[in-house]
Amino acid sequence: MAIEVKIPTILRTYTGGAKTVSAEGTDIESLFKSLDVDHPGLRGRLIMEDGSLHRFVNVYVNDEDVRFTGSLASPLKDGDSVTILPAVAGGAR
Amino acid sequence: MLTIDRATYDRIVAHARRDHPDEACGVVAGPEGSDRPERFIPMLNAARSPTFYEFDSADLLALYKDMDARDEEPVIVYHSHTATEAYPSRTDVSFASEPQAHYVLVSTREDQAGDTEEFRSYRIVDGVITEEPVTVVPFYAPANLDIGAVDT
Image 1 (spheres, rainbow over the protein chains, first blue to last red):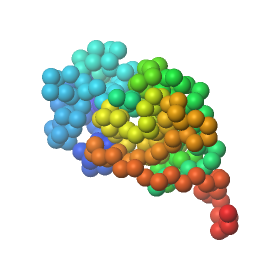
Image 2 (cartoon, rainbow over the protein chains, first blue to last red):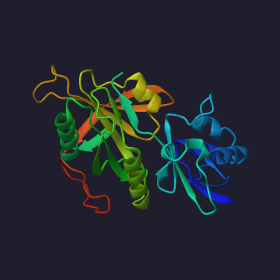
Image 3 (cartoon, rainbow over the protein chains, first blue to last red):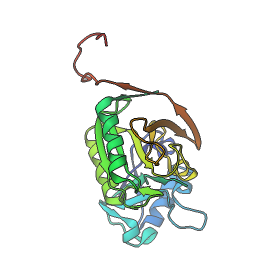
């Protein structure tokens, strides 16, 4: 199952500058493991040490934020497009 | 250095004042690699908080799709601090993930009265904050129009 993954600027150091890469997976968890094989270190920027999705990134399957569809367990099907974006946030503290 | 036109500068400050006491946030997009902040895009603060801001996740995706289709990038990422100085907080630094962007902070705290608003700009790269000067110009000539040198 080939899934197209859009990579944000800040993580393109892991993809040789590529904006879009192809990876395999039946859910986000397995997709990120597949991504990490071709682009070592990338998964570590997306997943925290406790195994959950990092607070600083948003991940979308097509147009759906995976936080609302099961997070890392969100299922993928052939032809899906995954977009990774850094959250834009901050504050006074 | 950040070079910004007067109208865009004023719109950022107006947005910060309008949303006070909540933090205001947004982007000024420009052609990729141009370093020209041309298209002002105020965003909703999904946190609606005086101490935190976050772009709504659906709005964020729509924004990046739109910029991608126009071959743009975020040249400025701005937000306001409503009770503290216009200097990046630890949270700001931990979230900062556009190394090519100018991070603009505007303070709307009470002792910043009148026309001396606190408007400051920073680069935030790998957790390191570097303040930079801000130059306000009357306007930008369109990038595709060669009008030659203009005395101002």
